[in-house]
Image 1 (cartoon, rainbow, N blue to C red):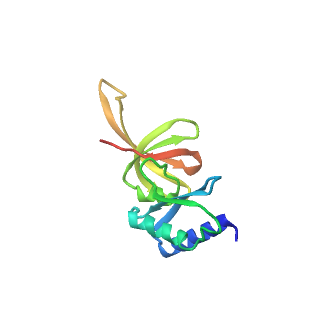
Image 2 (image 1 turned 60 degrees about the horizontal axis):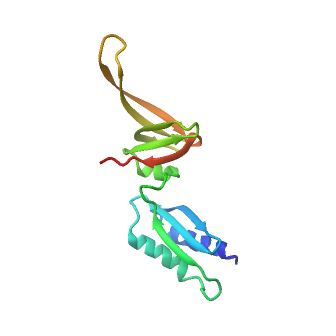
Image 3 (image 1 turned 135 degrees about the vertical axis):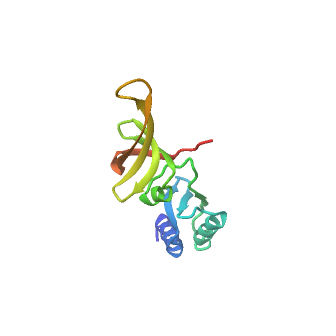
Length: 155
């Protein structure tokens, strides 16, 4: 069996045993350096990464094909890529770069298979008189319009 297919098969077998984990990215470099990025409904522990690594390494023969393997969790700097990842972050503020290069930030309130919904909170000038009023509105954003989405980190 081809090397890459074997790695994918072993990884999928592992993920079938761990329904709380899901694959974000699987990368192969020219020198057969393999990077696996996982996420989980309840986060990813070091033990989860070790288990995934062992599921692959213990079933491959390094004498037959030499490779290096890195298994890691999707960190805060990793963009949200799947509806499952968005769902995991419901209630959090996220920053979204749209395909038209505009940016929007809001609280992630709903997720489905086609779109996300953000609650936007801002102040705008009163229509009559001086001062500003608080505004809260919902904005639906289809996945097709999202170029990149990150969890907003607030200090």
